[in-house]
Image (cartoon, rainbow, N blue to C red; front, top):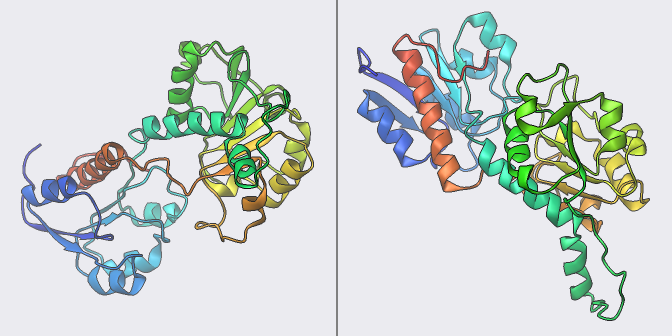
Length: 326
């Protein structure tokens, strides 16, 4: 890419953005204005954002008209360092014609690895087993103790079949699964590459032995997984969510786990985040909960940071962003 025609200012909303992204921006003429607060302070952002040409948004606080107004009319583009953008007021960006980028795609491999880890951890009762050790309830001589679900010969269902789900499905091709099914609004043209079958939402619930949620949070998907949905699932089914906590009614999930409506759950996302230490879900032995660690590898984080930087550089140079949000 050619160098930007003039020096330009970029607000960096978090001090821990990986150095390679900052070095790339600076090498192309950017003056980086870095916010130092952790967690990010909205007051600091509002103080430093006026007059910048671009915003590099590296956290999940609301990105809305208040930020855009504070930046000023010279603002040329914004990129988040995230795949999901449910915290962004997209209509406000569209109304103002400000290019908005994000970083989907590069997260898929790290999240897929973790999703399979959650499938196994929940399906094989890792958390419950550890709890039994801590309670001195390790039952050595009981044959049917801690019986779990295998991925082999199971029906694997996906709610959403984008990059993350497809990366999981790719990994499962050699796991001797019975079938891969998925539900999306329309069939994916490449589903044959994964031997995957498009089904209705009801079929997904009824047939899945492992049901993996990897879809965006929208008004349509919010609390899609509620008591009514869990009632349609197999009692032996394992529910895994690596998308957003808001897709699940957590009270209903708690009820489904404690009444035996479903067998187990593995969650990398919750509502709220951080999940309070006194959350009832944390006391359920058949629920494995992680603190939103899906992208937490240095390899993926650096890839995300560079994509966000290149989104900004492209927009500054008058080119389409690599991954525009709209």
